Image (cartoon, each protein chain N blue to C red):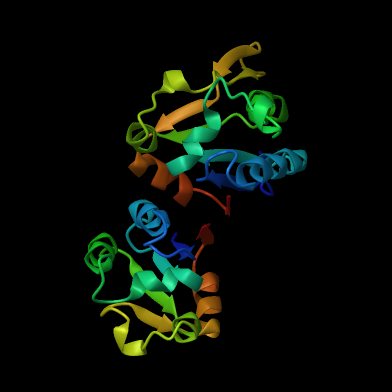
Length: 136
Length: 102
């Protein structure tokens, strides 16, 4: 990567439909993806609820934006850090989340998981390793 | 390499301050602003939690937001430094990044 590539982290701490934060975060990530930066997303606290599978918003009239997470790999957003303690506190496991994958162009386009489960301490390390942190 | 964290929610409303303090690294700075300043008060149900979890970081509070809420400056907990807007700018400038906890 060239020197002008910066590490951007989008921090998600809100559940998906009660407020507009989660949807806005995705919009900004997709816009930002056009700038060829090193983008990661973090999901902690209620943010882990954004990634649950089986979301069905039909009866609410709200847009179900959860399939968008599975398209992030096409925009080279391939690092979705999910905090283990936040899952535990909410009675969730990795099985409750969508299976989000990307095609690794450096490895014969093999499909690999985008979700990286990390401890709270590891999440703190991820945050401290960024040039820019944007919160939602 | 250190981070300035800002928190703008009351710790009696949600877990934002707790989550921030749980992720801040030793040597980081945490600045309580807007409704976050309620987390800087002494003698309430959160004071010991903040003092304990915040022991390894530098704690600041924005004095203008304290005054706006009618909190006497003497109620700001010991060890928490009150800064003005210029101090806020200095904190942002003297850290490698700013992370806002919403």
